[in-house]
Amino acid sequence: MKKLNILGLLILVVALIIGNTTNGNAQVLPKFGLKGGLNYAAFNNVDDVEYRPGILIGAFAEINIPASPMSVQPEVLYAQYGSDIEGSDASFKLNYIQVPVLLKFNFQSLAATPNVYFGPYTNFLINSEIANDAGSIDLEENTKNSTFGVIIGAGIDLSKFQFGVRYTAGLTNAFDDSFNDEAKNGAFALTVGVSL
Image 1: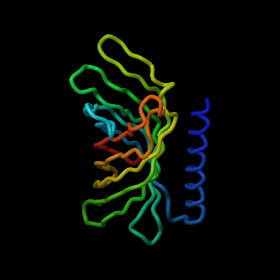
Image 2: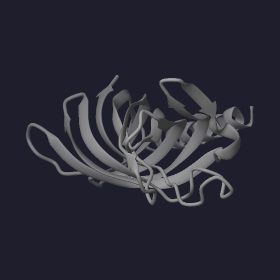
Image 3: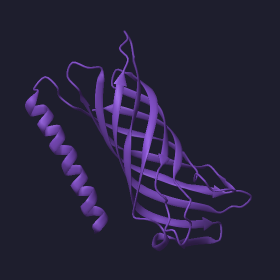
């Protein structure tokens, strides 16, 4: 319940920001869209782990900053993190609701709009486990309910479509210190978005 309250509060804040932007500048209307992609995640600062493939999927808004080539892009995503354990069939599986707020710099061109972006994110834990072919062990009691980090990426916008590549770097530990005091989430992602 606490996780849902925090997520609801963040969505309300984003909605208020969007509402104030549109009321103050009628010509600056936000774009809304859907986004999905492949996430290749592995813990940073941990030995003997390999990238775990997963997905990310969710929604975004893009709010242009008047008289500038920049925009702000808040997102709400379901994102799969964790790591495969080298030399075994076991994997750490951590799934989150991720809320990034990205500052996007757009390079204008004729047919397409290349861009770079960066910004902070917060992850809210949905579930955490270690699993192999024989079954799984729940790790939620050992996993932090929220983590923070930064995203840096680049992409290209073509008409209603967004294509991007990003790296997510966790700045806080994924687990409680008593379980593992060094594991931070990290992931490369390929994303595709479409404006509605």
